[in-house]
Image: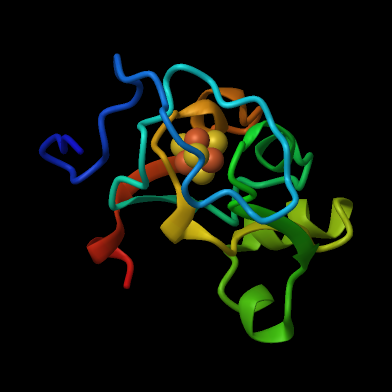
Length: 127
Ligand code: SF4
């Protein structure tokens, strides 16, 4: 894992994944070449004020790191005013990181999110 000054993880890599460590049992997804061979210590972080729950992260992540669900009342209270307005238009649904430990740092979720709401950070920064 490589970090820049803001603790964001550098994406991509030249490793060809040799195994599917961290993949949910029974799942069969295409693993992109940009995925590291094993979980990297990185995890995605979703900006819930930007997220519109379009689900691209769920679709592209080979390791089922994300799920879409409705915000709880405590989570809704943490939104900015703009975030609350935006959230109401999308049924208060957001992407959540539920298996951050399984992230292989391929960066697909970051590049495919239409709202640019996801970044990768070192896991110890968010635990
Ligand atoms: S970078 Fe994103 S898409 Fe790739 S494994 Fe991690 S959470 Fe999944």
